[in-house]
Image 1 (cartoon, helix red, strand yellow):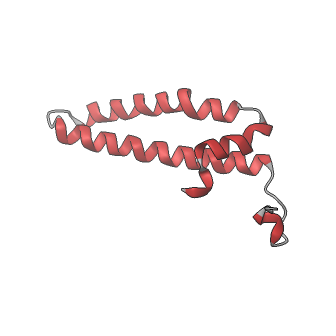
Image 2: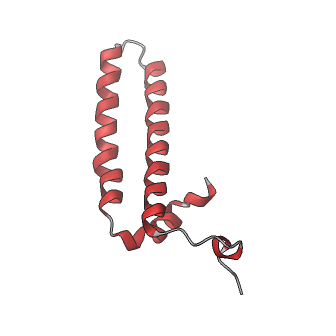
Image 3: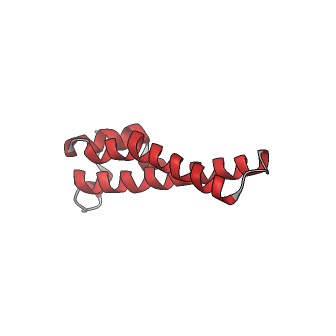
Length: 93
């Protein structure tokens, strides 16, 4: 029978709020990395874009990530944190 590693070493299992917070931090960090990589790629492919153009694209991508990914995660029911953590495979990143 498999045991929960957090309980096997005497620690209590993480609560759903902690999992949810950890998941939000992980997804936010990953989203930022993706946006930065895309901005870098865009700047290389379209050197005529000004810093203001790239700042505008950055703002739009941040707003999109917030509305499409981060806000729904923040608003998910607290008891869904373990499931969402498994879906996003947060323990293995």
